[in-house]
Length: 183
View 1 (cartoon, rainbow, N blue to C red):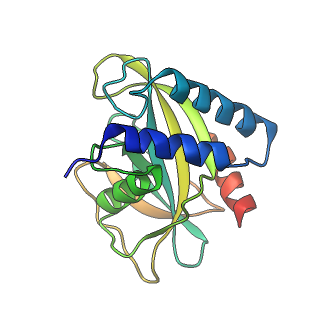
View 2: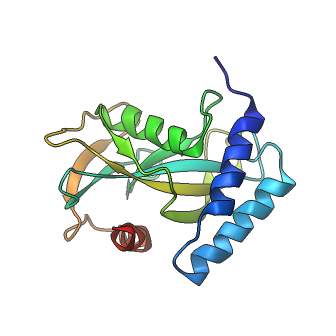
């Protein structure tokens, strides 16, 4: 059953209104996201061509020493899991957890419902035209012994030590620093 689109929009607005980022850059992005939500009733729908909110999951193993990254087939780089919000998502955290579960093939994942990081990036996604992803990122913990299963959404999927990430992932540094700060 589809959830009314305004439920996700209301949740996104409430979550970002309540969230207090640790630094001025993230605070500025939070205000920009809230402004975008105020201006666009369709901000959480992928059909919103000027841009739309997405939900990402930084999946950590049970020890917190490794992060699960996907080699994204269209982007061609190692990234955190996540993606578009769907009509059945009532909250941003639900969207991030759904994406993490689908893309990792693991069950028993546990999400912290508070964002850990925000990012805006240009992309040509399923709309086929250049747009922006207003990405809200959450920390997700995998149960002990959980092993990922690659889906069709990934070229490769694997655990990486937080201290030895693959090449060309420098842009993940601010996200992983925010995860480390959040504890």
